[in-house]
Length: 104
Image (cartoon, rainbow, N blue to C red):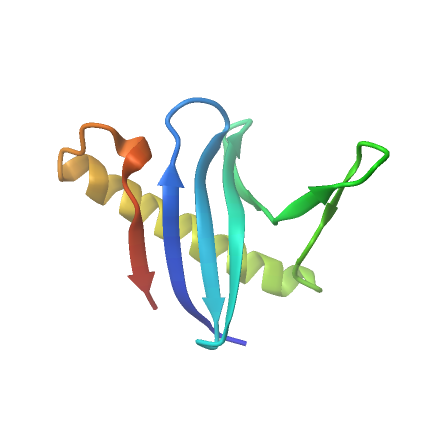
């Protein structure tokens, strides 16, 4: 399975959540609402989830193995950094409203 597109939907300056991302696989399947988190000086992704009646959360979609999770996380975080720096360099007044697309 190939990652064919990464779209940074929204940036966040405040708090640990830094972006909301959509990823397209093989040009045929899109996964929305992947979150880029920065906590304890480390970036990682959180897959889309829903809240259960007991208050816990369950992923709606997720990688099946650690190897693919690593590839997905690496590409999403790289796209986040690239687009964030581009927005800053372009002088975006409010980076939280900037959205980008990256074709791979």
